Structure formats: C-alpha cells, structure tokens
Image: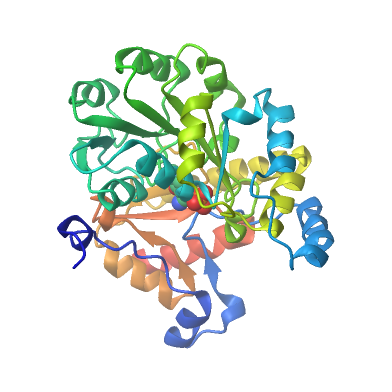
Amino acid sequence: NAPEYIRAIMPYLPGKPVSELAREMGIAEGSIVKLASNENPLGMSACARDAITGVLSEVARYPDGNAFALKAAICSKFGVRAEQLVIGNGSNDILELAARAFMAPGCAAVFSQHAFAVYPLATNAVGAKCIEVPARDFGHDLDAMAAAITPETRIVFVANPNNPTGTFLSGEQLEAFLGNVPRDVLVVLDEAYTEYLAPEQSYDALGWLARFPNLLISRTFSKAYGLAGLRVGYAIAHPEVADLMNRVRQPFNVSSIALAAAEAALGDDEFLAQSAEVNRRGMMQITGALSELGLEWIPSSGNFVAFRAGDAAAVNLGLLKRGVIVRPIAGYGMPEWLRVSIGLSEENTRFIEALRQILA
Ligand code: PMP
C-alpha cells in the first residue's frame, strides 16, 4: 500500500560491480578500467588511511552522532560555525535531508534538465512535484529557473559544476540568481566537484550566506577527497536551516570510520592539489583525443566529460568488451552521449585506444 508517488519513482541504476562485469565479458578483473562514477583515480590520501586504521579499535562503540571533530575541522578550514553544519552519509544524504526537512506532498522543487539524478529522486520520495527547466547549452538556465519558481516551490537545486554535463556557472551568475529567488525558497547549491575548479573560477559562496539565509552549500568527500566508498558529505547553511535538517537526520548517519577519514582528508591539502592536477592533465589528454577523433564534447569543470558518441549504446558495449567502463547518460535525457571520468594517464590511454578502435 505504498503511496502512488512512491510507486512512480524511477529507480536509480548504479553501475555494475567490476567483478560482475569481468565475469560477463570474460576479462580479468585487474585489467578493467572503471571511468564511470567520477571517483578519484589516486584513491585516498595517506592521512585518511592512517586515520581509518587508528579508529578500528573503537568500532564497537557508536560513532559521535554530532560529528564534533569533523565539524571542528570544517569550521577551522572554512571559517564557519558548527551550528551551520549538517554531516551526511554522502552528499546524497544532504540532498535528501533538505528534501525531507523542507518539502511534503503539495510542494515542488525546481531543477535543470540534465541535472543530477538524486534531485528528482529526493523530491519524489517526499511526494513533492518536480519542475524540470530546459537547459541552455547543456547547463543551467538560471533566468528560466528563477521564472519557474511557483508558490509551491520550496527548493531549487543547482549543481556547480553540473553532473553529467560538467557545465559551470560563475560567481556573478549565481549571486544574481540568489537575488532573484524568494527568501522562503531554499537554494541547494551542490558543489560536489568544487575542489576541481580552476583558481580563476573560484567564488565566495560562503560569503553569500550572511545575505542569503536561504542558501545551502552541499559538498562531499566522495570526489577530490577520494572517499566515495565511505559516504561522507556536508552542508553549510544558516543555523536554522541546519537545525531543521539535523532534526530529521538519523542520529548515527555517518560511521566512525568515515568521520575519522574525512577529518584527516580535510587537512591533506597536498593530496587535494595533486588530485586537481592529475585531473587537469587527464582532462586535456581525454578532450584532446576526443577532438582528434572528431567527437563533440562539452567543456567540463568537473572530473569527467560528456561526449557525443552517436549510437551511445553500441559505443558503450564496444568499450565494455575492451574492459573500459564509462557511464551512458540516456537517463539524463542525453541518449547519444556517454560520460567518462578522468582517470590516471594510463587509464585515459586505455579509454582513448578502445574508442579509437571502435570508431575506426
Ligand atoms: N551531487 C552531484 C552533482 C554528484 O554528481 C554526486 C555524485 N555522483 C553527488 C551529489 C553525490 O555524491 P555523494 O553522495 O557520494 O556525496
């Protein structure tokens, strides 16, 4: 007897595990290159690894439900206060907590076409309505999004950079948009890939919080910090927003191992810089090759790039047969496109060579 709005939800389809794919394709598991989920090809920082080992003796105890140490580390790194923070089981949890705290049946959320799949998922799960706004050049059309806000709208989701297209909005564009959104509508600014932005792209979203109490900044340890499997994300928002989200949060939503690893990873600026540099070089390698192959691709500010493969299903199968996993994005309204995550140089070469063979 689940409500109709639950029955209507389209399930999120995660990629197949590498082991299963290896078996299916008859390829050795070790020779498979996975460039499908925008993970960090360097793995995690050594500091995080040490922290995980250090906390193993404590796992018989519940984690700190208030994430005191991780919050303190975030506060000192970004100059925010603990009461502005929500710690999530991945930033997916943050998106869902925002939906649960601020929406119910009868409410609506606005987001862009080609936006992250969890926005409709989190919205539908609370029985609220999705208002999808046509994209402009594969990115957010912020004017159209502001115009699409209805009296029922409680949340606007904006990803910067956007996944799966990698498009980027400047600080000026975002700030102007915030000025156009009513104060009783929460703007969830999803910055899952913010650590990959070039220095000249940076903007001071935290500085906007004082003027825009309806702004929520969502970030994750899954991408540049290399901790996707541990599931840690966080929100920085007005204390009242954070308080409401913390009320609907499960008391122990993040494990002690994940908390310790995230705290340690946050302090490893060298690893973060190295991750960004590997990404910058890999992005040039992959986009250069895509251009050489005569393929259209969307300039990306993330750790992935979407390219027009034409018969994307056939190209994807060809890549799989050659042991390379990328992400088809038909589900994002881009049936001719594939998204490839930036890997290590040799992984990128495997992808490029496989693609070259398929298109030959
Ligand atoms: N937002 C965006 C735009 C993403 O691409 C992702 C990961 N695919 C997430 C949020 C969620 O990541 P996580 O739950 O691992 O933090």
